[in-house]
Length: 239
Image 1 (cartoon, one colour):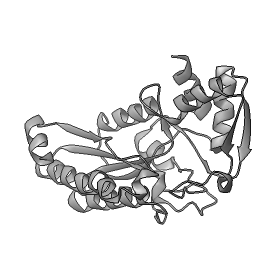
Image 2: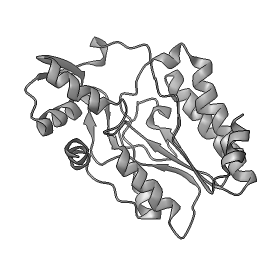
Image 3: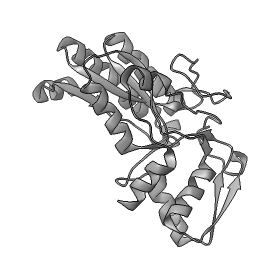
């Protein structure tokens, strides 16, 4: 069916942003997560190869186990610690196997002013509650979806197409707790925000403790601009 849909659309470029992203639900919906994040990606990648279509596939920092203490480069060892991450890594491998000309972009903590995401949820909670607890021992960097979209457009309009894996997130090394403090500051909310360890907020799926992405490659090869996380957060919240 997916193959038929692609043939009906007959795209010139494919930006595959579709994914099963319910990290905790994936622990019990393993087959669905694998179908969307792995099997479908292989079909898309094969189509792109067969029809000489440029493909950018979006992946995740959750392909890493979180044991690093330095920003992760594209060639860093992958070792997912949850079903979602494993399905996304399988998708990367399927993409690369089917289509050596594809580009994969790993990103993290994506948010926007549309749909359901962490920033919108925190804005709501910061207005509804007197106090909230947010984990302070998971480190990475958020990504404003508009910035990621701009990075993708920079690549597809560049003179040279350089296949492979790239990292993209906004600049900054912060915890989820620090991210919420920034949301609180920009929004002017008075809710008390308390940092808590991950052990105090157990979830069905484990999260990487450290998954900061090194963006050197995408900057060097494509001249992609990477804004500071707080500047991008301000732009999102003030639109």
